[in-house]
Each structure stands twice: as C-alpha cells, then as structure tokens.
Amino acid sequence: MEFDKDRDGELEPSELCEALSKGNIHYNKTDTDLMIRAFDRSGNRRLNFDEFKDLATFLHKVQDSFNSVSCTKSFRDGEIHFLTFDEVNVALTNSGVHLVPEALQAMCRRYDSDRSETITLDEFIRLFLFVSSCLLTFKAYDLEKKGQIVLSFSEFVYAGSNLC
Image (cartoon, rainbow, N blue to C red; front, side, top):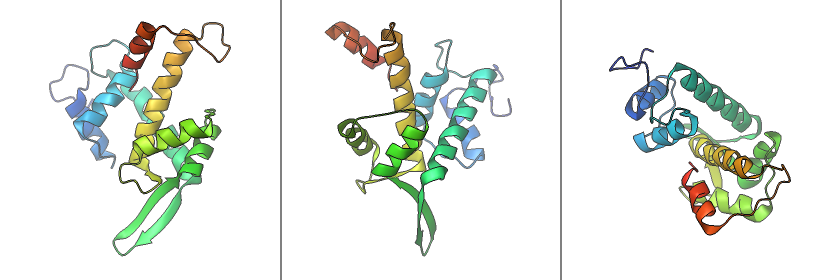
C-alpha cells in the first residue's frame, strides 16, 4: 500500500488520514481511528489491505447515499452540499435503516457540529459509521432476530463500548 510508511502491510490512523486526503476526503486522526475501529477485524487498531478495501467500499456507498438526496447551497467561495434532517432519514431509509423520529433527531443533533440543522458529507460519514456500529452491536444481541433485545446494565456498557 502506497501510504504504508513503515511498510508493515497495515495502515495506522495517521497513514489512513494521509491516504484519505489524497482522495480529497479530509479527516483528523480521531475520525480515522473511528474508521479503523469499525473495520479492523483483528483488533490491532490498524487496517490491512482487505480491511482498507472494505472501508473504501463503505465510504463510496455512504457518499452515493448522501449524493442521492443532498441539497446544494451556493456561496461566493463555492458550493456546499448538505442534508436536512429529513433527507438524512431518506438516505438512511434507502440504506435499510429505519429509526423513530426521536432517535433520528437525537442522532442528527449529535453529528450537526455547527447546529445548522443540516448534515455535511463528513458529518454524514461519521453518523453512518455510528449507525453501522449500532447495527452490528444490536445484531450480536438479537440472536432470535426479533428486532428487540434485553440487556443488563453490564451488557449495555459492554455493547456501548463497541460503538464508534
């Protein structure tokens, strides 16, 4: 991999950050660490080539979902693309995620960093990483596939520690 500076066959957060910036996607080390946690199957906080390909596929899927419903606002300096909270719901629903309005609003407010009631692509990627990790964690407890789980407090804390 071109961005593997130490040539160990894996990308650490700073290397992933550089790789993504070459694709015009700019994230800080904290964000890339979240991405690595979401796609690192070995638990070593690094991505091998297959894990990196899975992340790239995920990012393209999320970008496509965002672009399919995004609005554009023009400024003197250029354009900004964003989703309203209702459009976030459409994008999530199109991806098979159905949330009650209260959950959607709470999640959108969490990722709306400037409190504009709109979500940029970067914010949407963070939001989608969170939703994806919630789905995986939930499915691990929903063994009977009923769409409902019962957790003790300890199980809740353990499940929460696995979320991005």
